[in-house]
Structure formats: structure tokens, C-alpha cells
Amino acid sequence: MFILTRIGVHINQNAHERLAGIKRMLARDPKLSAKVDYWIETNLIIVQAQVHEITTELEKVVGGAVFQQQDIIIPDSYETTFEASHPVAHKMVATIEAVDAVLEDVERAYFAGKLDDVNYNDIRQKAMTAVRGSIDRIFKLTRPGQRSGGRYSAIEMAAWIQQGNKLAFQTIEVGGVVCLQHG
Image (cartoon, rainbow, N blue to C red):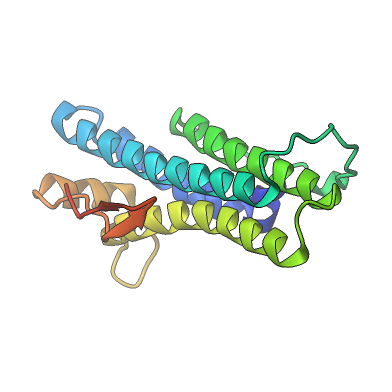
């Protein structure tokens, strides 16, 4: 997966392992676990909306052209392996595969001469930003789980949530829709 190679498997995996740890720590509290699930789903909806925007932009630029499957040589180094310790990883993989599929369409359009270098770079950057934004939101969400001067702790993050703190997003606009802070 090209996008994992660009972002870094360890960064993406670390972000989603944080969510997995919170889910494990809150497994005995259905109400709080549901709040974490809601936050995860909302984060995925934001990425899906961004992918839809990118797809719409690509269609506008290429005029809805359909491209033949082209043999694009992908280096072996794009192959990525990571280990998952929780089903939340399936959501991570599905999200990245969706963005990767858009990037494949972008590359086919580029190599077919339907995108110039500026459009190609712009659309690719938007796709990368969608995934990076998702990861960034996870790290911002889990920041309260940082030990003083130390590493992240799912136990401390779960305790923070159990104290009544809300899982919130910063205000973000996607496709003309504003997602406000909530918990």
C-alpha cells in the first residue's frame, strides 16, 4: 500500500493501537465504550467524506473519462506488513485501502495524460492529508493519556474518560459540512 509507505506503518499502527487499548480498558463499561465507538466512526466518516471530495474533484478534472487498466509498476518496497491486536485495525485497513484506490485512479489518469503535474500533485496531497488528518485526530484525542513526561498509557486515557471528560473533535469542515466538537 503506497499510502502506508508514505505515512509510515509504525505511526498509523501506533495511532490505532491507542484506540485498541482504550477499547480494551473500557470493555466493562458499555456506555463509555459506545462513546469511543462513536468517536471512531465519526473519524472514519470524516475520511470517507474527504475521499468522496477527492473522487469528485478527480472526476471534474478528467471529465468522467474511464481509463483502461494500465500496468503501473509498483516497487516491492510498497508492500507493507503490520500486526493488529484489535478489530479496530480492520477499519484502519479499509480506510487506507479506500484512499489507496483513489490514488490508483489518480495515477491511471495521470499516466493517461488526463492530469497535469499540478492536478496530480494536488489530488495526491489531499489524499495523504485525509489519512494524516485521521491519524492526527487520534493522537490529539489520546493526548490526555500521556503520562507526565512519559509514554502514552491506555490505562490513563481510560481513567481520563471515566472521569467524565468528553471525546471531542476540533471544528473541521468537510464537503461543506461542519463537524463541531462533541463527546
